[in-house]
Image 1 (cartoon, rainbow, N blue to C red):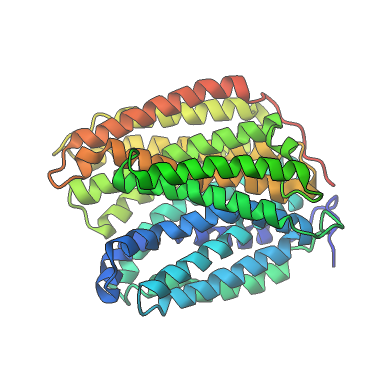
Image 2 (cartoon, rainbow, N blue to C red; image 1 turned 180 degrees about the vertical axis):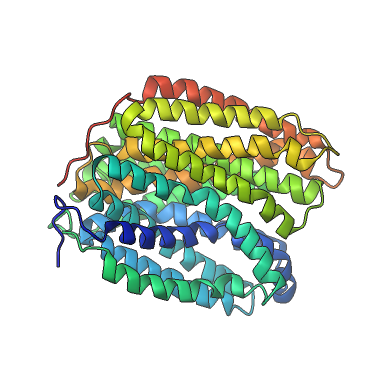
Length: 465
């Protein structure tokens, strides 16, 4: 049965729990493999390149295919694409867990990224269709808290599973969860009318934007390994610029464009994209560099590192839930400014790290504050982008703003790796880490000031059709 979007569905909060759990396992899988890498690398005899790409290829395909996933959700309906993405992700998790060599491992991670790209924007489109007004902002608060939780739980779960039943269970654990979610989503998530009668897909636009985003992510990931001046960094980034130009030309000329270019320059969408890029970039860079500080510099085990990040995950939840509850009262501008200001303050505190001080006393307050700030900004970014958007475009707009999450994180991890090179080298020093935190303090501070100019104090309600 197709649900009438104007009548609140009594199952909506249970449905939210199901789609949030689906999103949670996607976020968890972006980090859970980090802890398992040493064990699986030894067993599968991974090359140095395969060691890196076992992590990075998931982010590359997730970021590269999000726009296609959002467009397909608008064309064919959100629930079918949520289920399709979940099936692909679950089967890919099985294949990855059964891998006997680096080709099987990386191939499985590719399809995990594809499944995630199909699922994520469709799930967010489902959320915007089920909730309206202040309820939507509360739901977005729950949704937005998942990033930090997934990161922290990923580190902890990776340590527990790898040291217990073995690294393969890092992937196998997704299978029973995925099957249970398929059943729950079919029972709880209402079918919604597709937004367009024309169900043709812009193949040329899809190929060019996917290749452009993938090339950009490839370049910035390589920058983290080999520096920004390396040809393997510069060439992919240059190719990405050219392909984005080609994509713009294609979208102006084809009959059924993947993206109406006017959507990209709408004030709320552009603001939401900027906020997501800044918040996800700083948070992703922070989480990466802090985990490296704990493990590489201070010698923490994977499990101890995961435990450190549990309060940080709680901070993300607090920020996102508070942002979701307050945004209807105080507006996007206030939440975005406050969140980015907290990001700046948190990173400012982390500049004071010392080589031998108490980690919890020196690092946790700053990490907690940047997590609270990031959680709030994620809500502001999503709320801004989706304000005034008709439901028939909600999947695409969700994909646009969410594309800046993995892309921003990849860029800032690359920046952090470069700036903190002295802290990550063979004879590490704390100065590299504090330099990275200094950069993030400046970026978050500038972002906070920019949000006062870019963000509206109040957002219009989303259109329903």
